[in-house]
Length: 222
Image 1 (cartoon, rainbow, N blue to C red):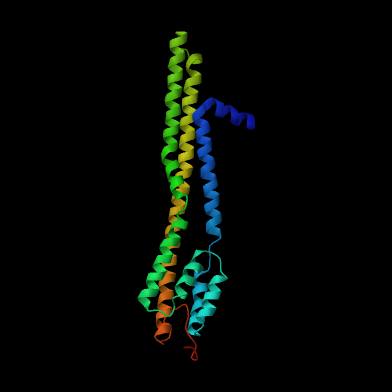
Image 2: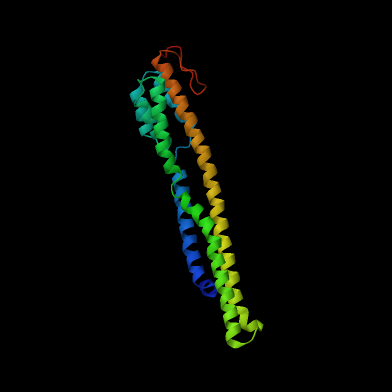
C-alpha cells in the first residue's frame, strides 16, 4: 500500500507533496473542530430551566455556580451575564452581547485556513498540470518524437496533480460548509439563550414571576 502511495506521489511530482501537506492541515483542523464542538454544552434548554429555578428562588450565586460547573462556551456566557444580574436589562443585554462576540471568534477559529486551502488546492493541482505538459513537450523536443511512450510521463503527472488538487479542495469545501452551518446554528442558540437569561434577570429584578416556558415558578417562588 505504501509503495503504491509513494509511487503516485513521485508520479505527480513536487506539487503532490504540497497537496499532501495541505490535506494534512485540513484533516488536523477538522479533527480539532469536531473535538471542540463535542466539548460544548449540549442541553441548553435543561441548563436554562435550572438557571430559571435558581433565579426564581433569588439564588443568583447558585446560578453562577451552576454555570461554572458546566462545560462549553454557553455556560461561560451566561455566567458573565449573571455576574451583572442586579443591573438593568439594557446593561445585562449589552454584557451578554459582548460575551457572545468574544466567543464567536472561538467558534470560527481556523476555518479561514480550510477556506483558503479549498481555494488554492485546485490551483496547486493546475500548476502541476502545466508543469507536466511542459515536461511532455520538452521530452518531445529533445527526442524528436511524439510517441505515447515519450509523452506518457508528463501527461500522467499532469492528470495526477489535477485530481489530487480537486480531491483536497472538495474535502475542504465540504467540511468548511459543515462547520459554517454548525456555527450558525450554535450561535443562534446562544443568542436565544442569552436573551432568555436577560429576560429572567429582568423579571427577577422587577419582582415579577419569570414568564418563560422553560421555568414556571411555584406559588412560593419570587
